[in-house]
Length: 422
Image (cartoon, rainbow, N blue to C red; front, side, top):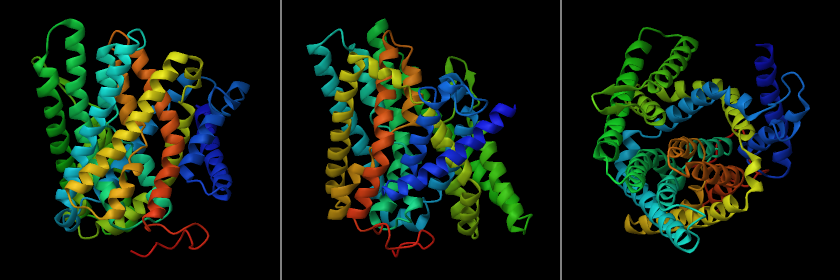
């Protein structure tokens, strides 16, 4: 037990110290936390095998999965706070159009590239794995994006649309992956399972929205019994932890496997709560401050979990480079095309695609499912490689795009304690 406590303390302290170095280099804090995780991981300082000083093995980093899940829950809860009716009336239609189209276009672009690679080098990647990777490419990591927005107090049309799009992206990505993975399994086994391809993903989304809406309303109802700010904050924290736990429950109804999406459940909880509670904004600010150390832990642990041994395989590097290039192209083109269709402002059209590059938890979850394919390990390793690159580079690109759009000021010109003007 003492090893876990020491390790958590070292992770938070290491992440904070690295963020000071990153500040000098004008890098986002998220990137600093990930680098701190790499340094404390089993391929660097973790090898020294000091008590609690880093992670000696990847398995030790995975022991902290429950903390990562809790952090994702709070991140999703905070994103749900962006779905206020006032914003949805002005940007809802545009966000749905962009959220769906950019994900679908990304999947198509990556599918075409990887299928072409399969035809040229059949031994490099199977057709089922190529199709599965195309669907995984649609997923965008909301955590890194939200952290950059919070750190630099970003505000403006691009920021508002971005937060809505990354939230919608999770639901769209879930449907695309379920359909593509079902097709991939059908190609390997010779039969299509309509239940897995159509029914289960739609049911998962509906169940997640229902559970999240119920939790959001129940949180508001319970909050009314308390007037102390600290007690209301404590209750909010407890409800997020409750929804994270409930979202991990899985059950079977006949031949149908039922489950929940953690991100969708917690986002819906935040959405319902912020729209029916008149003191939600002040309360969400207090919860954000409480979860700051948890968010640092999440990114440091994520950095420690990045497997550097994948650099030793030329085949993984080849497929990974093709995947990264064409996923980046797909996100950029998808955002550009969908923004033009929805008549978005020129600054949004030019910069949105770059902000959608970060990829992490959701994609890794999908990759873990894809291991069931005959060469599913290849899929997982390619996603691990892409996550390593995207998580280190993505936050920096997001920051650059938001600066270019004029929604965060260059560092050194404003205090971090003062929000940027809208």
